[in-house]
Image (cartoon, rainbow, N blue to C red; front, side, top):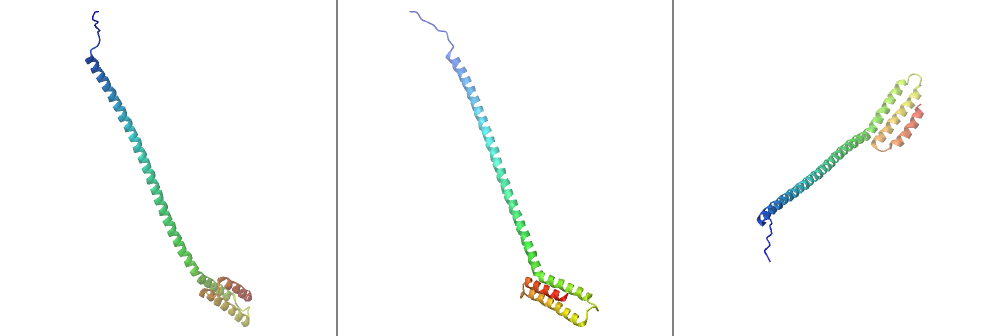
Length: 157
């Protein structure tokens, strides 16, 4: 039996090459891993920024609604004050209007009426003034006074 000699590559040469190739694959794998992690991190950062922007937009919208609600409340309060003032001024306005009508009617009264008719007319206008005073003092309601005033004006005319 003879000795067989095999010719092959030296293990040191193969080991060095294998080490370099393996090291290259590892470096490539690490690069891909780091790239993927970086991309995922960028995606998470973008998502976090988007969520933050949405939250800020909601907070701004809520603050805007609150300001508008406050402004509307203030406007309603102003309008309520104005309406109350109108309600308080209404009897005085009606009295003033009645006095103006009375002056107009008295200016129209001329010699066409005799003294008895003029006295009756004066009584009616005095009665209308009395009615308006009753309404302004709260003893009569406006509806009651309107009905009585309508009857007095019928008598006047």
